[in-house]
Image 1: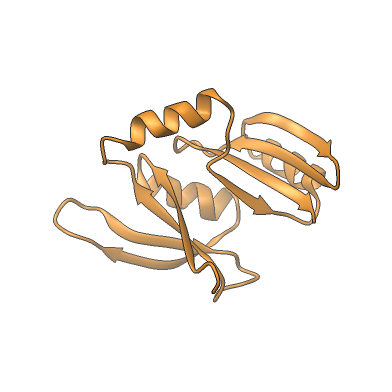
Image 2: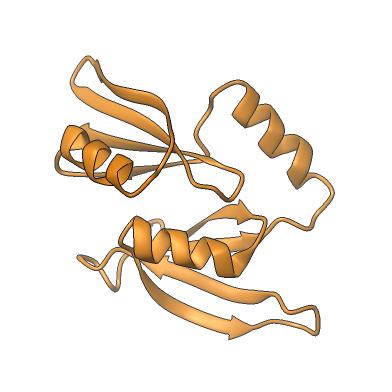
Length: 130
């Protein structure tokens, strides 16, 4: 068994696609219209693993999503975690692009982490280490 797909809820799929591709560096895997409401089956992947785990940029329209995301953000809990080779270098690169971090790079035992605001309603952790 392996993880094939995971998701983050986003307020605006077009905005999320720009952020996750142009800022974070993922690439679009699937972009398929779904239904009449303008929603899309929109996934991105790492350019280093185009056949790897997909991240679904899922519309946040369900009534449970707002309270769920608000509670996570209020408590500083990331909705997802992405591995990077060098947290400090990625932190500096992303800050240079205007990304807001809620946690600067911090060593936590064998890993180094930082937490950013994805501008789509989520906190995202980047981590280096195990």
